[in-house]
Length: 92
Image (cartoon, rainbow, N blue to C red; front, side, top):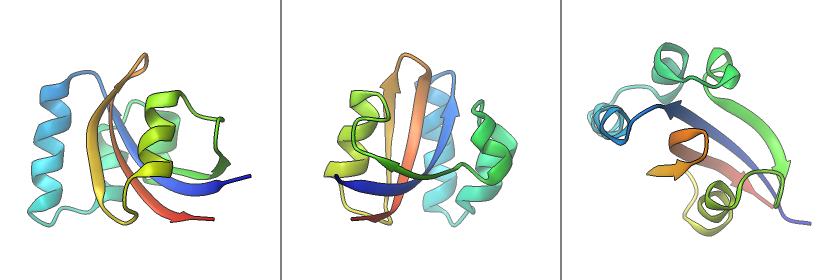
């Protein structure tokens, strides 16, 4: 079973996600932005979701985590929870 370790930031609007992504490209720290802005409880841990298996997250989230390059910020990605910025740390 494929496993991954990822961070994410969850916000309400695509606009908010795009603004945060812009800050990240300018050198802002992912964990700091997650603690400050993420609506997910994982925000307290810098957006760290820990390790999880394929299929544990919603399909749009899984597609990014298991299909896009690691160590890059992807998104905004829309799910029923809101808009995510996703950074996959590792995959196995």
